[in-house]
Length: 423
Ligand code: SF4
Ligand code: SF4
View 1 (cartoon, rainbow, N blue to C red):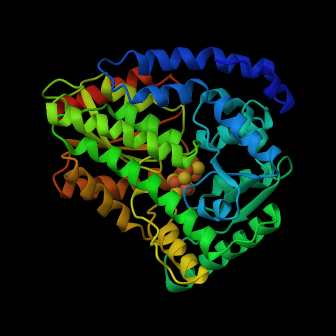
View 2: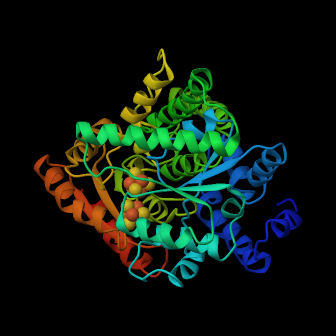
């Protein structure tokens, strides 16, 4: 890795604690990723990005700030990246997927909080993630109770804006979400001193859609009987999509897909014949959370899809293009970012169950693993309906709950192996 020590010091990071993370991450990446055989060459780009994750992209964000630009971080796929982008700001993801940050979150949050929230708060308060130091504004949302309370703590340490996401999808809820997006646009104009115009929004929508199309193409490679890429590698690229420059990301993902097309033509597969195909559904897997994919793909299975925010929920459904006015564009954002995302924070949420069944059939999954991060009440509770619907459809399903530690890895492996054997 290049030397970014000075940059981290200038960001007022706890460099000593951060060094510990820099020591363990490459080891985990080597064990989980570089040990795979016959990886596509196009993954080299994503390997590079992850190996320099706290250096390469952060230095680009700082360059943008030096030129007067702003950086806006968000934690949820309901927050439209197109808004900061249309005001000339850079949007970046802020979710954290490592146990490294969890104890920092536990200093201020109950232990019985999901690890994703604890890690995000810990990354900021412990000053061990450059993205959490760089962002000029943090945008939270009211999706789940844990997050709502976490933002109240975070706001004492970082500039925050909260978007109030409706819990239902009635006409009045769409009207409310439109108000929220309009407020966010106004705030963004104030922050950047840039007016959002129909043209700037059109460009932002097109860029975000291109990223979605590239991801859809990549994920679609797993519809093939012979899988040209592992689920782990697709997950990695998807996680990087939240941080990388969107245009470069789309370009590099298409380059990877060109190589995968070739593999498909030649019948190349990274898994032996008879490998069981698994669709994962549930809570998001933020970088560097690779635990479940690794367990499945080293137990005789292959992950062929993720009905997750780090999966289909992130890229399925484009924002409609070709609007005549800025107001119409906002309506299209509302449609995509409220109607098009089927998170367990909504009630009723039957569309999510329809999605899981559709994806399981589409990707010819032999079974579904419905995953919930520990203490995520909404996904854990919805697991009942998910499992019931899948059983009714004759699709084998296994419900799992886990966190970011490795303590349950042995037990999870046993359950996954038994499930793969049974299906
Ligand atoms: S699971 Fe729900 S709350 Fe969490 S990132 Fe996805 S949409 Fe947002
Ligand atoms: S995983 Fe569940 S509890 Fe955690 S932030 Fe997402 S919705 Fe909230």
